[in-house]
Image (cartoon, rainbow over all chains, first blue to last red; front, side, top):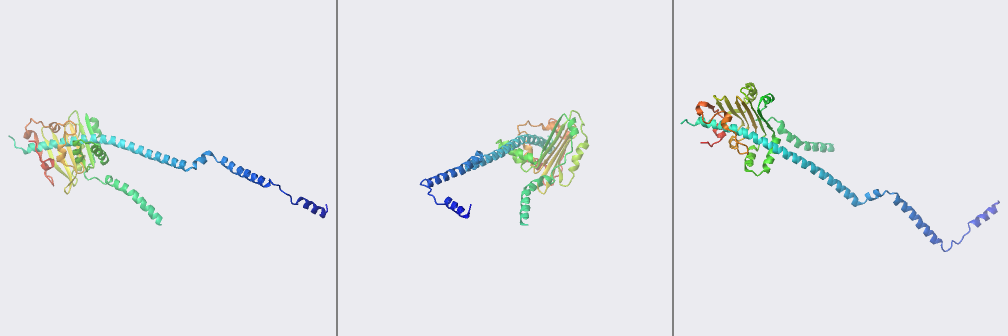
Length: 122
Length: 221
């Protein structure tokens, strides 16, 4: 092919052509189709659970649940501790009363002996 | 540097309550006796009482007493306020001379230490019964009390640590819903016996008040 023939072929190939009346509609339709194709797959790829976790209500609900569990745990431990303390207190009270009773009896015995010694015999 | 100071200060502030709480227990309690291990006596005894109430247990008992509206409990709570310990060892035997004097000497030796003073000592010759009351005083405050009641078939050692009012203690007997302990049986002295014939009582001088004042001003006439 000579240089002139090549130039002629290029001119023929690159000559202006009328796109037609429906060209713009076709381009817009393709763009809409491309947008739809770009967005929809991303939404499908995201795991459903991950999507739900990102919602504020779900996040705060989970935090509140955790806080409630922690508070309930602390309350349960404290309640158990108080119950044990109460039982130990009851046992300690019984021992204390017994100890004071024995001590009181001895003090009264000495007191009675002192009084007898100080009182003159009839 | 400033960060380290803050960390150090925070650590000290955190440990301060722990150290403060540990101090009273770690410091020697002046009215506390080191009671020997009477496990050998407990094995020989027909009845034994072993009570050890430290400050924490007394606090728990006081909490239970506070929750009860019984007026007797209020009197007991008033009596035990400030107490740091109550320790009782009491052994009853089926036969005479089940324990030796050396068992008691370990306790008596501690009562010769400075601060301890004998308050009242009673001796029943016929029943071979001795009851001695010692008090530990610092100035005008009582830091503790010890009672040693020795009979041929019974040995009782009581150590109350902290301020104790003997008069109030004497008034409490029989007010706990517990049967009153027979005093004559405890001392081995019968009420029918002539007191002067059976009982020899020696009232020892007390540094701050008389035994009569300590044991209570009222008399059971």
